[in-house]
Length: 368
Image (tube, rainbow, N blue to C red; front, side):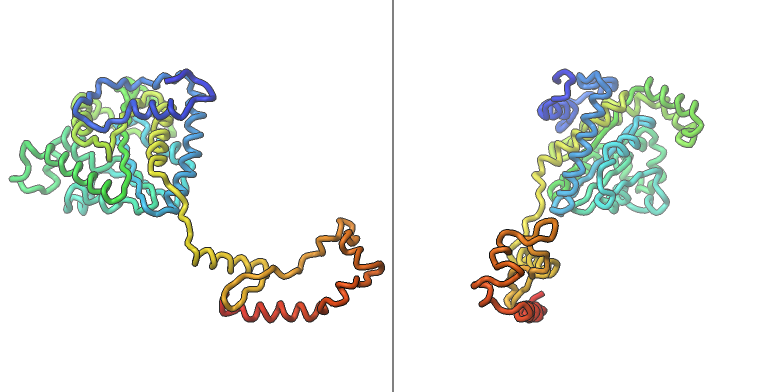
């Protein structure tokens, strides 16, 4: 990537996004991506500037997405604790209109959710067309924490005959098929794994313990889960390898530096939305005529029975008047003392013209 500069080209950002985008898991290895990478960027301030630009662009793209009302967008965030999911969502989506965005966080399943298939609780919260849906954790938990802790599977009331050594492969296939189905229905799917190192996670945990206002974020179970770090990394790698696809790519985001993670996430979303060629709808002739009639009513222009808009009523001050109220050059040609010129003497009286205008407005009632 090019060196830091205010003129960083869009092509540089695209190359950065491509570097961490996984569309085929066949050769993917998690160890090939260092959690401390910054994609060649060394300036936090420059990265934050690029992130702000990306956030502004996302606001414009989301407006078109909402207006066009054809595509839906699903953003999935997965990570180990303290990797920065919540902060990334907050910063990257800060410019988005809340009316067009939905965020769902999935914790331990409820008893009702356990009475359904493992994808039920997420499926019923999918975004509508024209909106962005964000899953803070998702159905991928079923091949991550459930795989690391198989006892959780026992609570899911699965028939014993179906819980075999093939269950993880079967769930990968189910997830891949589901995401392929969504893509075919017009949904853009982007999946982000915030890849934090074990050392950085420890530092963030300690920071939480040092700051009383962040104690609520800490749980003793967070420390216990660190004992299963290798198992989690293996589960993440396997999940990405089996479910990465061009229509549902994974982005493995180096997350030791929050400023870089946020830049990469914003750039990836912007790049994907740009590719949709989102446009504001173009209205047809009938709608254009309707808008013209609405404008006519607002400015006081007559509309005849056919709906044709005429000249606006001349209720404004004479354009020939100067700022001191004196008549302009054209008005002065009518003669001194306000006398009418030859042409003006043949003009209809003022009250006659107003009567015709009023009559035209009355006739426009049916059309308006």
